[in-house]
Image 1 (cartoon, rainbow, N blue to C red):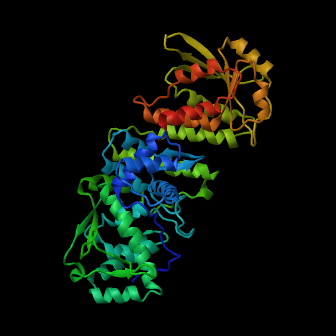
Image 2 (cartoon, helix red, strand yellow):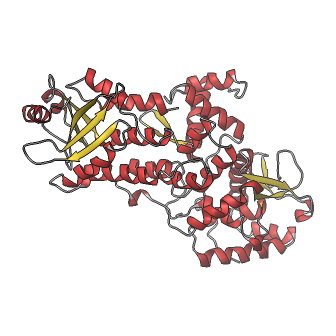
Image 3 (cartoon, one colour):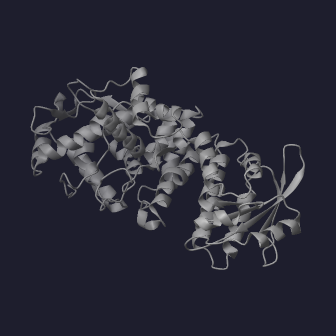
Amino acid sequence: MINLNRTKENKWIMQKNISSSDLLEAFVSGMQNQNNIIDSEYLVNYLKNQNIYHGRSEIGNSNTMGVRLSQACFYMFGFKKDGYFYPSPMTELYLNKSADKEKISLVNLFSMQFPSPYSETPNNFNIYIGRFILKLLTDERLEKKLYIDEFVYFLPFIEELNLEIYNELIDSILEFRKMSYDDKLELFKSTPNYEDIFANCMHEINYYFLRIFAGFGCLEIVSDYFHNNGKLFSFRHGSGNTYRTDAYASRKNYSGYIQINPILNGTVKKLLEVYSPFDKPITQADCLSKYDWIRDLYEFEPLKYISIVISNTNDNSKVVNTIRDMVYQSKYGSRDGKSFEASLKPIFELFRENRNVEIISGSGDTDLLCVMEDNSESLYKINVDAKTSHHQTQAINPIRITNHIKLNNSKYCIIVSPKFSRGVKTDIQGFKIVTVEAETLANYCLKECLNSKDGLADYEELNIYISQNLGTDITSAINFIIDQKYGI
């Protein structure tokens, strides 16, 4: 039998507050109705009006909404940043009714890992839990199923995964499966503080995790009256008279097993052929910042899975790589700025209105010259200057940039940098110049390309705003456009 460290402190920690997929769906829809601004009071009233939620007190209601938001993030519906909720690509597909929720929730499950920004699971856990669970549920040796007691006894204590550990686990599960109910119970009891540990595991897994994914149609919970001769494992939760069992559903007297929804078997097989459960998950240490890590987990990585799961979606890997590279080069590119300039060229080629992008560079001219087409099919030119800095752009010479605008007969100049000092805003006042932070421009292009039918971004809306707000920093305005169009 595989040797695992089973303690309450050393286990997977699943977010728990909503156990119903219907309530979780309604919660996300409520976020959409308030334009992705995190407002607990609004959510409480929305869910009450839908006859879905009945709270005990106003303070409790607000606290509950915060917990539920974190749970939505844990289950890969999106992430929180600066008082806003940003939906994952799966959530956008769901809200736009662009795909079946069974397939969408499969991507959510496949994307789940430890470490997670929304789980307090200890740092020694480094595992793609979604891939791992699905791998077990496709294994012929297990008859493509896992009983609830097997899941609770083994899986929450698996810290990492390789082929050797996986095969040892399979052998252990098969050995466990052959045991009598009484022998299994003795195994549970042999764990110090067993009731507290397994009541907690049973609560998180059987009452929340499994029921949520079964509710979305990704997994199925199948009753089995004969499993363990119809007996249930029951563990006392806390000091009261509450017990957590392995019943297959609420108020049932026997257990069951989980399996993949049969209509998804082929899709799961394709995913696992490309993305191994034995891979090492992305950690914050692998990324340049926590925000970069979260965007990898919630935006970039799921797009790879979506292109396999949902057949009518485009493979957006090229767009994602283009945007990732530009953000990286803006912060950490060569000190002469050449790598940042080169990375901006394919960014402006993502705009639908673009007709040509040329890297000019040099001290006497702009960095990039773009030819764009407006709605009346008239052509106009814009200058783009790349200002790379390992901290922030401190100053701009507007006279020199104005000369470059005149030299090319351009409409205006966009200056892109990872960050601008406050003084820069004063430097450009009264000139045909705007500034924008690289990450905001990247995020706009990403959202536009992922949500358009042709895979390109709209520039006309930006052009109209820029033309009316020359001499300003447009970062906040673009963020507002993103929130209004794509926030929920």
